[in-house]
Amino acid sequence: MKKTILITGANGLLGQKLVELLVQESSVDLIATARGENRLPDTVGYRYVSLDITQADEVDSVFETYKPQVVIHTAAMTNVDTCETDQTGCELLNVTAVSYLIAACQKQDTFLCHLSTDFIFDGADGPYTEEATPNPISIYGASKFRAEKLIEASSIRWAIARTVLVFGIVADMSRTNIILWVKKSLEEGKQINVVTDQFRTPTLAEDLAIGCWLIAQKEAQGIFNISGSDFLTPYEMAVKTAKFYGLPTDLIKQADSSTFSQPAKRPPRTGFILDKAIRELGYQPRTFDEGIALMSKQVK
Image (cartoon, rainbow, N blue to C red; front, side):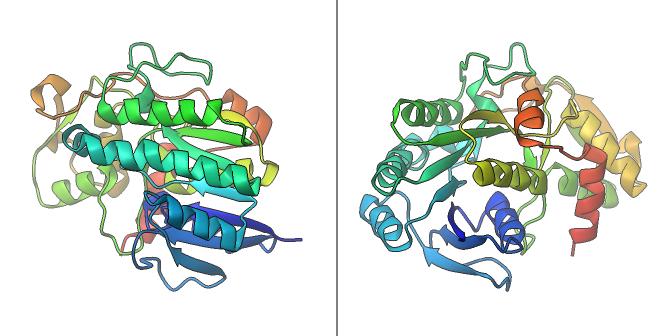
């Protein structure tokens, strides 16, 4: 008996990696959804359905048609600064839409795996366990924390997969990330300023997809930290990238985050402790260096 899994945000980085992973699973009947047209490459073995999760009737209709046993909810407004300047849009996509998904999951007895973020924390004392107390310092972080609280207060079966600074390659190369930015800048001989006072556990998108699949397989309930295991500053990530590609590290200059003007505050020290996911799910992320190597094979 196949398990019907529905993905929201299938056109995004994590959504694409989930589709690539789950079409290989013979036990899965995969429904990929996103707003607008399918932007995935010519992958076979799944159905694509256009879905605007901010429309309750659309959510209801798609759930009624496909009756998914599991939903992996990746769609969100994730640009931290955009959330600060478009608070209405952030609330609609990151909170209100989650309430529609919860209602649909309740009707269909669907298990919800919801993606959340390290930005629910203030970054005073990371890395964090699943039991740490959230205290968001940005509109984005606050919206994701409100969504978590909605899910926890509901009567559905759920898991929350929290992650950190996801990096990887989308099919059409339309999105950049710290690795691509460093590589391109150094290849062009540009000096770059990279912060040394923020700490993260950067997450390879393929690893995050595997973590979500491990949760979906077991329908494992509760909160799980799903990130990379290397605790690094962006400066250290940049140096590792330069060394991998044989590019000059002397063009990478250390900077303090206070020298950058951004609408949203960033938590200084986050990152996750992964003991629970390793123990209960068998999650084993790759190192940051292994992530760079995998991405290098995918760059067109």
